[in-house]
Image 1 (cartoon, rainbow, N blue to C red):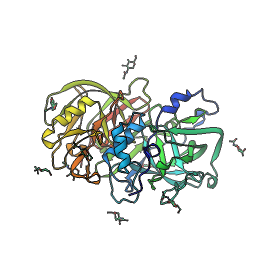
Image 2: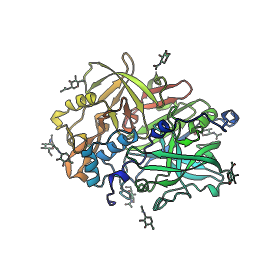
Image 3: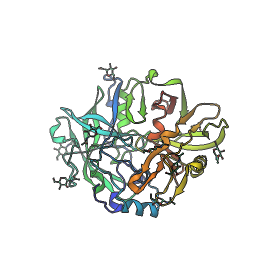
Image 4: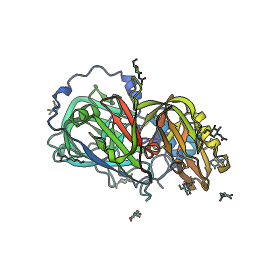
Length: 424
Ligand SMILES: *[C@@H]1O[C@H](CO)[C@@H](O)[C@H](O)[C@H]1NC(C)=O
Ligand SMILES: *[C@@H]1O[C@H](CO)[C@@H](O)[C@H](O)[C@H]1NC(C)=O
Ligand SMILES: *[C@@H]1O[C@H](CO)[C@@H](O)[C@H](O)[C@H]1NC(C)=O
Ligand SMILES: *[C@@H]1O[C@H](CO)[C@@H](O)[C@H](O)[C@H]1NC(C)=O
Ligand SMILES: *[C@@H]1O[C@H](CO)[C@@H](O)[C@H](O)[C@H]1NC(C)=O
Ligand SMILES: *[C@@H]1O[C@H](CO)[C@@H](O)[C@H](O)[C@H]1NC(C)=O
Ligand SMILES: *[C@@H]1O[C@H](CO)[C@@H](O)[C@H](O)[C@H]1NC(C)=O
Ligand SMILES: *[C@@H]1O[C@H](CO)[C@@H](O)[C@H](O)[C@H]1NC(C)=O
Ligand SMILES: *[C@@H]1O[C@H](CO)[C@@H](O)[C@H](O)[C@H]1NC(C)=O
């Protein structure tokens, strides 16, 4: 275990927070001309997503990260508990392959330098640890970094900066560059690459991850002055303006860009429009049910799909209803860890969420069992992957949700497609 640090310096890692875009109010774009991107290099490709073996599971930590990502208050009890237990930050060198974070190879520069990025549909920045990163310990270990001075195609965007604030006040910031990116087998010139010059201490403990690649629907990046996001420059070079996410329980996943692979799902693809004016991949569910019950319960609620969050966070009442169905499993809300816990030997019910007279997603009960609490001294108790979202007005559908569906992110038509797939 690494030493525990104070909460304020330590809380989140993969989390990009929209605070700055609210504060800045981005002015109109100056020098970037998207029409210069030619369609003579279009294509489609697949990129594997490997699970990061270098991070340890912790329910309270996963919840804390999600709260901080969306700028939600972290309850005092959770903050204190996490700090005491040294749960803040990732525990490096703990050899457990788990489904908390998937990393995909991306090549930046000429010649290409391969880095491992976390593709995050809940943020919009493409930022990497680099030869410019000054924070001590940041480029230790096996982390692959980007060195702009070793790339003949890298050009600094003078007068441009980026800064990301985290919900707990920690941050990352640095310089802004343009460089060529090789994603799958498509070369995309002049992509905005944010080089991390300063990161808070909390960000260096995961020694594998090189950075983030944001894929949010229409959220501006934290580059100032405003610059095109990665999706802005990617979309014109794809055969079709779509990407798909196919994560799996306890095994590696796949992102595909520019095409929908109809062999990867079963039944019909169900499409629902992205919420008007949504910056995220948001839509509205109209109902749910729990367990084997066939009764459809109407309830309209907003949700966003976020590959950069681990858990599923729903409105309080739905979460309570879910665990009410598992009371014989000793399920109860524990305020110390700010989450529902239950006996590990219990069977959790399946959760169905969907659309009236339409498609519904079934999340198997076993997917909703996030982890045991042995490291917290409660080896018989487990922490659920379904937790409450608190004050946020929309639910967050993280990786646990994506493991149960084949998901299409249709940039062109502004819609999200969901379909069943063979589950393991
Ligand atoms: C790019 O890769 C995809 C598979 O990911 C393949 O179908 C396609 O033919 C490749 N295109 C080129 C130009 O190599
Ligand atoms: C980590 O686990 C993998 C797979 O179980 C194993 O091959 C590898 O040797 C382990 N590494 C260490 C350092 O224990
Ligand atoms: C990084 O390396 C330095 C020097 O070898 C060492 O003092 C430091 O503890 C390392 N930091 C981490 C986070 O591993
Ligand atoms: C940015 O500034 C550096 C140093 O002043 C200069 O060498 C470089 O050409 C400038 N880059 C651009 C794109 O103007
Ligand atoms: C978006 O707005 C249009 C026009 O007001 C409306 O027809 C459409 O149903 C709205 N879509 C969603 C997903 O709310
Ligand atoms: C269980 O879930 C159903 C919805 O499927 C709900 O109607 C019921 O109140 C829940 N609680 C219990 C104790 O069954
Ligand atoms: C809540 O969780 C903490 C930490 O795992 C544990 O020490 C405590 O006993 C739990 N409280 C209840 C009421 O189960
Ligand atoms: C589940 O575990 C608890 C505590 O460890 C034990 O009391 C209970 O009998 C177990 N239930 C089953 C069905 O094994
Ligand atoms: C939940 O996961 C833990 C390990 O994280 C495992 O020990 C337990 O058996 C699982 N319980 C269920 C009901 O799947």
